[in-house]
Image 1 (cartoon, rainbow, N blue to C red):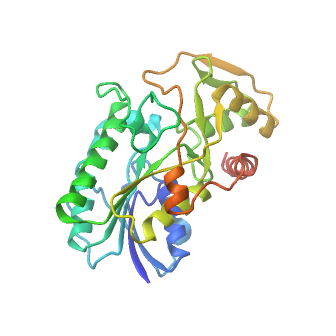
Image 2 (cartoon, rainbow, N blue to C red):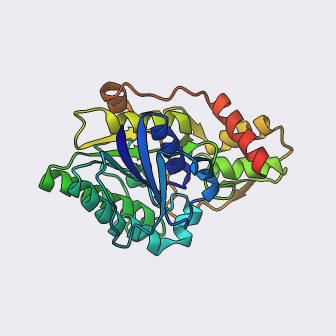
Image 3 (cartoon, rainbow, N blue to C red):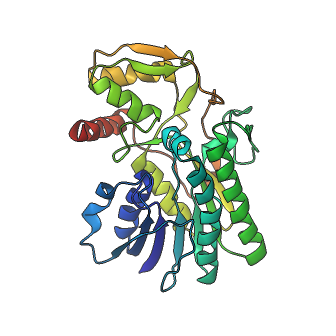
Length: 312
């Protein structure tokens, strides 16, 4: 049975990862400081004998007993609302926090998985985005607290790979949605659904021509899990996301239809440095781990809308 450490364990993706590894012959130690995480995401695990939770800020030095087979660093405010509300904490968790977790992984010769993001590509000048693309990021813009923090985390992770021969892998996660997202976290899926459920106008920034792709959480989990456990992927950086691209304007219509809402669309100015296109090239994931999303947008949205109906 593998032993796994997961930071950000009470967050959207982190809590689902705890479930995924527990369902696959693992003992899981979860860490979170609840700056954006929610105890309700992991409360169902408190009686699981293979799950241990530690409330801890990973930006501070801390010690853990025993060794781990896998260390997955997923602690970080990930939505624009959260990382703009907590800019210092965001910068710290992907610098100090990353170093602390890399040290833990190195000391126990663990495999280290860093949660990176499509945001490292910034407002991309190539489309779709490939892993070899260096990005187009404004290092002094308001989004840089997240973009540059993740870029620094990637650099730190690769230093440990080169200097200490640590087995590291970096999934670059594109827009993901599903149950356990926060209703008002600033990302398009929960924003649109929460507004549509109460017949409020859906907020569209700019003219809505910017594009996004949407990957359902269960599909993403399969990709992260496979990237984490398959041997021979040392040092790999891999895009994980859907290649089905939607204009935000059109996606708003999809949500209104699925929710059967009376909402209209409301247009506001485009935020600073908001990317115009965002869609991954997943050729590497397809060839190296045999992964691609399988859940249709229709099914994924149904599950997500049902979840939001139950919590609203």
